[in-house]
Image 1 (cartoon, rainbow, N blue to C red):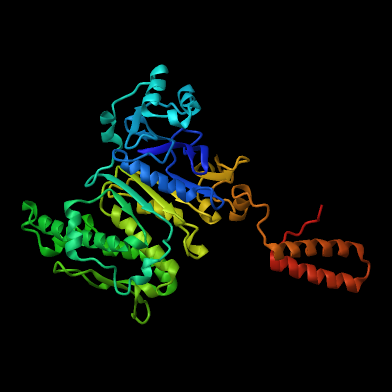
Image 2 (image 1 turned 180 degrees about the horizontal axis):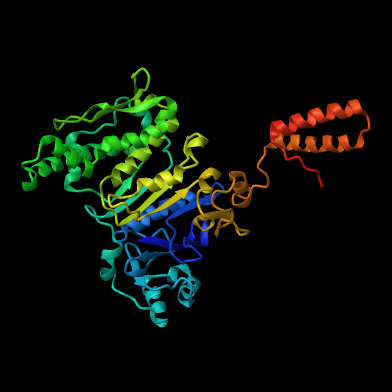
Length: 461
């Protein structure tokens, strides 16, 4: 299931905003979407709105949203969720209505008339097929202990709780075993939820231990050697800490660090916690989590948490919302960051059934999306936000993206602009002078400025 489009009417800065998430060539919803735009245009608001509405269809109160239509592509076809200001009700119906007169009729009505009954009368007038909500709920509602997954990772909170992880995140074996009774479908991945990441790690460790015991006791395995049983089980069931180490060490290695899984201590008693740390590669000295750099700490906990929620699971219906994925990371980590997130959501069947939404200010991140996957939010003349597709091609120079999609007039600062004007002035002066000594001096200055600022060697117009 993936979102094809969202139409918002009368909510905060979105007076009448249509967001199209489809590939214009195929009409299919994009696998990944990136929101960009100036501060205040609503990038985070959109992620939060999706997080509030979509995973809570049955019990969601829509009193704060005058009008919202979410169109979904599901295995059974197009399904529309119509949210109006009727508390606790979401109208579910089929058909592609957002592009025809039905939807236009609904938009013409004053906000106070946009009730479920009014919407139904318009749909009946246009002879749109309406199904009872109960018939469609099984296809669009999320369930715990299932193949459903919805993850929202907001930007860093005001008080970064990662600083408080002086030993390891606070949880216990007893707490982790609760996931065996019910594994939720809705997860918040943030510094405030780091203990839930640690709990999920313990859950996977203990789950694997139980599965290994069951595997060894299968009738066909009774006469096999211990060595063979271990090899066969390891092939079919990897260790979560080994996989986390592969993920984390991509960034830890560049800082001379590594995940110390050799000395990991798994919990045994119900009150025990998982003890595993980061260490220096050379001296093997343990580095407390709260002493890691902000960027590294944000990266390993956010990435690790998301990975643990997909680890060894089948996911048929998934959504991942990431706000500010670039948070505190050095630019060299950003160039393949989107690809890394896409790898995180591959399930145990090597399938990716998760739609990813990101909100970013970083052109390096935005350049990793196709133009139709890039949603540019911009203020219109009335002071509300419109949404348009990006124009810069995927993989374009981030500076080009800043001009084409971020709509900056230039990408150099005040001092750089002053030096560019000085550079052009000196070139004009060079062409006008006939004194050899003065020419030599000007050429030297021009070459130095051009080299320092990487200015193109061209004539001014």
